[in-house]
Image (cartoon, rainbow, N blue to C red; front, top):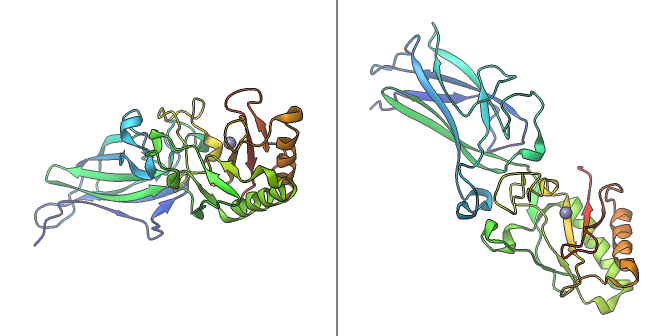
Length: 285
Ligand SMILES: [Zn+2]
């Protein structure tokens, strides 16, 4: 029984998750009721995001979520929806660019890429077909709570109010902050345990704490690849001491750096505010 009247196929390099910036060539065509490819068919190609995926709670994010764009050439321009003529052979390629949000530009702005599940769909007058894919970074793992070393904080409704979704990192970065924390607690046993705030989301990508998909406004984009962690330093429960000009916090910064963190981006952020914290960030492997 033949039922798929418009079909999409994609290159053999299929993987379930594509890193932002990856260009995937997708062959699209339309067939008639006998299964023959129709020359010069008009089809509609669209991409869309699955809401609530990668814990971006739809109820606390603006709609629509920005899905990856595609182009009719491998360098754009990039769109989320267009009508295409399939040409004399009836088959043509379109180019899906994972994480692309801008209309122009061949170099992707990874600060704007959203990790999430998405759908690529092609429709012809007689029917539609689609495939699912994800945008994100591989190699990000859950970092469990370690009560003698750290407790999780930072859950927000934007991410379903659950710290399980917000504490994911790449292994070398998680190991780095674990070693830094262990050394710190060896020197300051009275600290008890530290409080670890945002790391990364399970797929990585924009860590959208305000639900606006804006890297410049609560987008927390440098927590997108599982390489960063924030340590509480605002004086609330479990904070690293703010005494002596936050000397202990600068010691923690130094310990992260000794454990491989990046010297330029690892620092005490927003000192003197309610958001004061230590941001430790490791380079990619
Ligand atoms: Zn941070």
